[in-house]
Amino acid sequence: MLHDELVNRVLINPIRSGAQKLAIVSGYASPNMASWHIKRIRHLNLSTIDISLIVGMCPHDGLTLSAHEGFGALHALNDSQYSSLSCQYIYQGGETHSKIYVWLKNEEPFCAFTGSANYTQAAFSAKRREYMVNCDPVAAYQYYQSLTGDTIVCNHAEVEDYIALQREHPILDAENLLAEKQSNSVTLSLLKKSGDVGFGSGINWGHRQNKTKRDKNQAYIPLPTKIAQSGFFPLSKQHFSVITDDRKFLIMRVEQQNDKAITTPLNNASLGEYIRNRIGAANGAFVTKQDLEKYGRTTVVFTKLEDEQFYMDFSI
Image 1 (cartoon, rainbow, N blue to C red):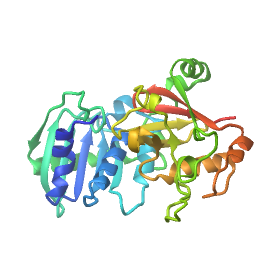
Image 2 (image 1 turned 90 degrees about the vertical axis):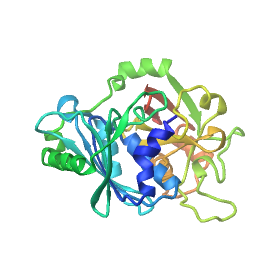
Image 3 (image 1 turned 60 degrees about the vertical axis):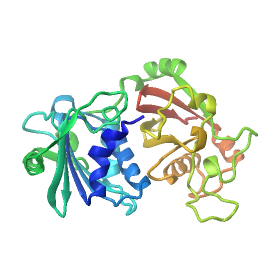
Image 4 (image 1 turned 180 degrees about the vertical axis):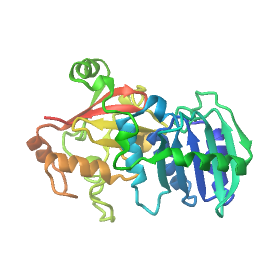
């Protein structure tokens, strides 16, 4: 669960006062946090904003490939209902451990915060003690601008020449992953308790019997109450990263009443598109139990790598 007072003061309330842009310098940052923040703004029906993020500690620690791919996906997000994210990495001039949040209104620095909280869900969690205070917005924005010459945009074609990208999580080699699966994994069925697919639910969430217009690729993975309450997945609508067995990257969250569904929150169709493509079904097609059985399985296995990172196996 995130710390509502800290989140609202630093990340939300300035929008209500007319701020339109947020410039962030953060030593460490995660695409899960950016995704959550973008979704939260949408959920509150606030005006969309432009978020410009500089990740500072890349020269020292590099960046995981999954985080890099997550930032790239959000950087490329082109949906007018969501706020935009541009992301840059410090690659020269020394690592940067600062945490600065500068809000702009009509292109002018409006308010700013500095302190200990990185742009991560962990830092803004109610379980953490972080301290953020107001600071001079003009000086803070000047500091942000002074760093831009030492950055490279996350989608730059040659970013790997400048930033050390860790291509695999250490658990993801075959031997370690097998051991981790045996000790820290859950198997989730894509079928209903009746043993068949749903209509207007599950993989076929976008197919509505009342003919409501929805993207027919919309989908979720059913989550049994026992597993939802076990603490295996983050709850309270926190976002988490998922690496698939075919090395795709998805940002997911647990949602709906009684935490019954795992979705791709910025686009509920992304999960459905992935599964349909994987099993060879047509885009937007109604997926039957026979389609899944023909592919070779009706379940997915999630393995926890870290608190906010998972591996999803849908291989045959």
